[in-house]
Image 1 (cartoon, rainbow, N blue to C red):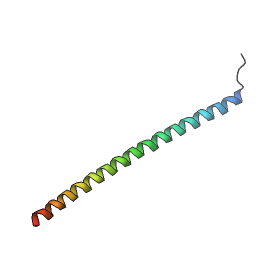
Image 2 (cartoon, helix red, strand yellow):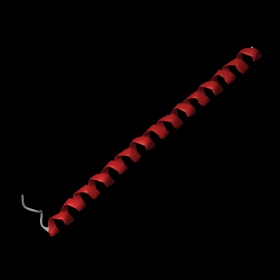
Image 3 (tube, rainbow, N blue to C red):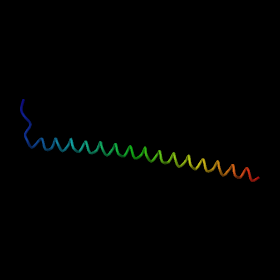
Image 4 (tube, rainbow, N blue to C red):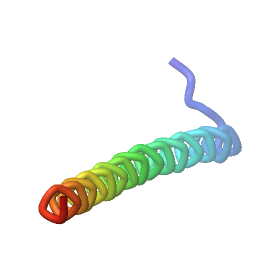
Length: 62
């Protein structure tokens, strides 16, 4: 079995580092999407609560 030349290790290390960076960036994108979806859900819930309050206030005035 022959050994891999020293300069080939530079390319191998570069590919490994590139793959790790891509995986980390993909994980960060997924977590930011999840966080923004959670924020949207919270905003929708708050808007629904305000609509309920307004409709109750209108019902009391009639």
